[in-house]
Length: 214
Image (cartoon, rainbow, N blue to C red; front, side, top):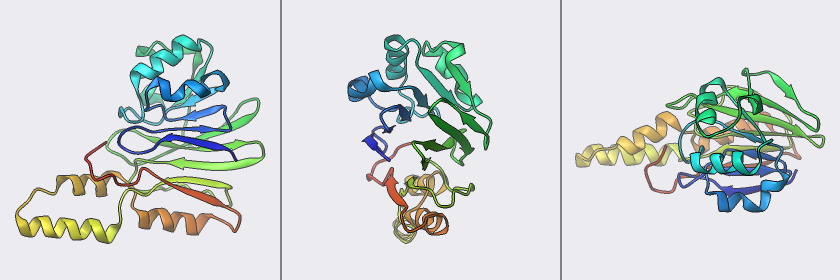
């Protein structure tokens, strides 16, 4: 399965799958320009600006007036405000397959500080899962070809930092937010071990950058 990671992390998130599916749109339009002409759909996850760049989405809607956008119901108003036509927005019920001409999309719920979802995508006889910005992954995806999963922090390291900051009388809100709203490397590895097979590939996403973020 071919993919291009344009950005992953608090500075922005965007991945192009097989040249036709954009998952997350949290980057400047210039980063997307080489791919814009081939896109068939943009899959949106949640409203945070590092995943949902409003100016870029507005530009896409203007430059590609027939481009489709897929999302959970919580993002419909945001897409409309960006100038996306209502008839081009596909609203996904969670855990339900949506068949297009050359690919299939299934959204599944994630656990963040705002409504969020991940995606299972079937294209060219391959299956992939994409999930970031979540404290856990409750869905199952056995035997997929590709897993793109957040691995934001290490459990032992974040606990060590929390205890050190407590001892120093320093605020540890960043570490607390990371643990409550993001997936650890340990949980990502557990999910991959439970679901992957010998030929599966995985990419760890949204890894810790030492800065506060959504």
